[in-house]
Length: 316
Image 1: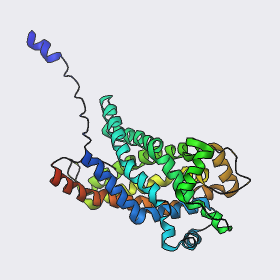
Image 2 (image 1 turned 120 degrees about the vertical axis):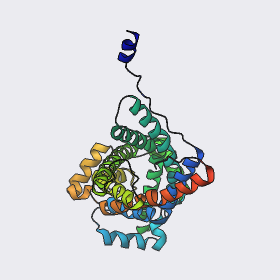
Image 3 (image 1 turned 60 degrees about the vertical axis):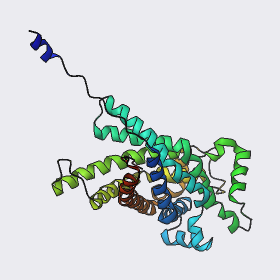
Image 4 (image 1 turned 180 degrees about the vertical axis):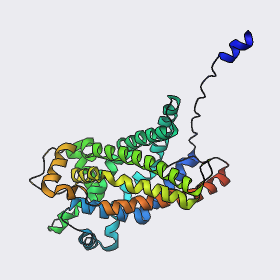
């Protein structure tokens, strides 16, 4: 009788283990992000932002515009300090928040796929409000303020611009467009995680690795590149973000810009095409980030594990 009762008692649910976040994980993420942005990342960011801010320009016209305002260095405007601050902090924020969100989602009964997307979306929103809002704002200001120089005015330096915005508009001013950044990061990470997982499943079916075998570096890059490229569907949010943060003078622009009225302004002045300006360099940026984070990331993870003896679980 007692054996029958014991057999009928359901086993307690297995709780998901919380991922350990170590200093080596955070340092690795910051280093990879700094390498990515200092090489091709910032030039692609500058091209993307220039095209989004000057929506009447084509790709080659935008390249000429950037070259004319500083030669090679024109492609690195906003790198120091804003892109470096963003690159060195956003990975840590994503890792902490995404791992916590994924842990609670799994323990609430979510599948691996859904828990991964939940972690990515939550981490992306946290990135925007914690560090990326003011960094993207100041990078955009740096890139677009040179229209002042073109009209004969002397453009102020980086910190002078920062302090001027802070004095006039406070915290809200240097975080202008942060809601658009949050929407972009949330949809970007959610889409990237989702499409990358779907691409991985397809690659596993084609290569016969359907029982948990490790994907090689090339297969990981293909999967993550598909995810990164397809995540550019939300380019209208990026164009809205650039317009909200731009130092452009236009009497037709809404005085108090929100995501909604900025969308309306861009659509009325440039149509649907204007909302997708800069999508090509953005796809290129996604591919380059993937190569850095996946191919170089795997090599760096192996090295860090050998040196520290710690298992690296970071996804940046």
